[in-house]
Length: 263
Image (tube, rainbow, N blue to C red; front, side, top):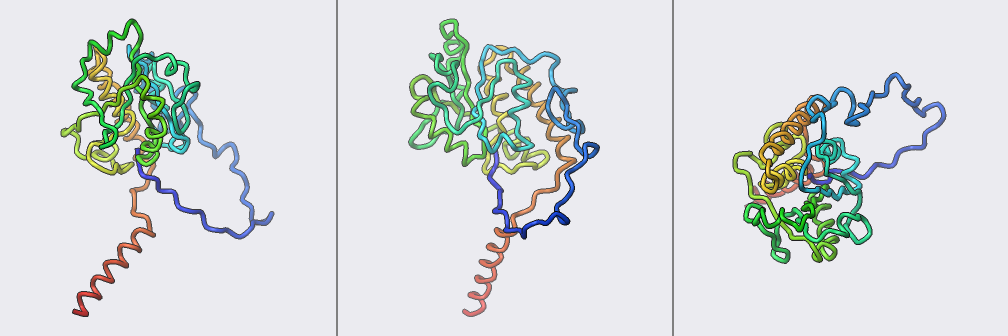
């Protein structure tokens, strides 16, 4: 998850027939892998399992429409790597949106606690009791979007989720500086605070706890994520502060200097 960095588009003069650029020719279009649906230079098929990983847990990802367009979203790869992972593009969960959720008698949804909405540390669950779900598969619900959007999605979905789902959270992994592979290794997307992780990392850590072979599943998912970040990093420019924010900070610093000089 990441902060929104969209800037308003400036008004542009109308184009004329002479100034309108030619559409790119087919020879300039990037070839897309038919399996992982990523451009060939960053194809991940070589690290994806030959058969999607089987889990007793069914993973449902609410995928914000904005995040669905982001080149670094991990949800598409996650649904390729896990047999029982599905994504729903939307802003809230409600009755009628997913037959799996409508029929679920017990589920977990993953999001940090707040004062008004407490959560259970996922490591403190009685795992055997949760997995022995009257013969039904346990459902793990996660939210994929910027942190602002994710909070909005959770808040909008809580009335529906309160009927059958328990809110859980992950412990901070102190072994990962910054809390996220995005942040600690290649700084592709800046997380807002310690403990934030990408959706794929969050699912991997949760499955480590609730799946019988969780360590193996986590290791494979993290391997895929590391390769994704490594490949993508070579095609991205280093992140820079937004000009508007820089101007605002510089203005405050200049004002402080003037105040100090006038004393």
